[in-house]
Image (cartoon, rainbow over all chains, first blue to last red; front, side, top):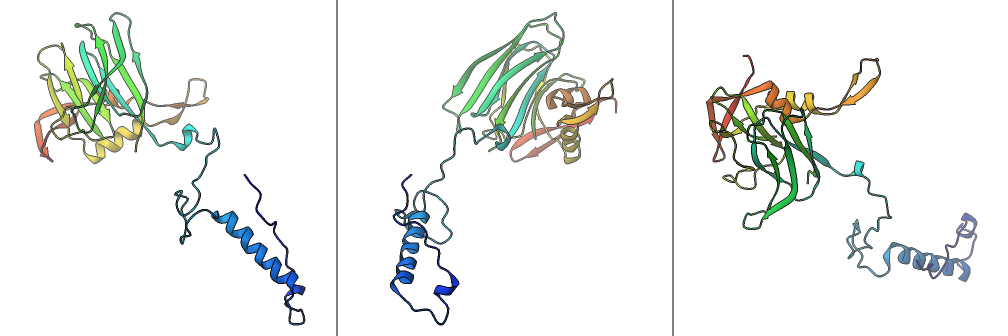
Length: 150
Length: 109
């Protein structure tokens, strides 16, 4: 980013006491400081009280890489569990992470298809994942996924 | 907490879908299924506050001591906990917001 037009001028108390003149050095220092502050606050934006960095009244916030970590995101978990066979289409939130399958027992086959279906005729849209278990399955299996709560 | 289940004639929950969000529409199923054994009934659950607190407390990550006495973080899947702890109560049906909800009863009660 560009440097401000003027660097900050330190103004001492001795320059503003009752015996000190209002000279050019003092006034020019104050003027340059005001320019410095204006440029730092956001020279190109429309001033507003309590600016909120919306890109209009002040510059938008720019997040550095790797600043947003998982711990900063509001996550919750959805889960599905069954102990019967069949095809189950599980509704997922749009912004979900990694539907995963966990199964107890090794007699029956259970498959998780990450091929999601999008029902665009629903409002709002519904996303689904398919978990398929053998018809006579009696073993318990889980599907879980993390998603953003809002 | 929202849960949708398939239960048998005894109320035993054989499949359970559990999330924190509401259904997309009052009449829209969150869980679709095909080829499941006959005799299972599809229902949305009416989970009272006390049961919801119990489920949350049992399933959220918490510390326990393992067999060696070392603390470990454990959690439990909510859908699995509901299946193992509760049964559907077909005799307790309520209608809320246009949705028909089936009550819960504790297994063995």
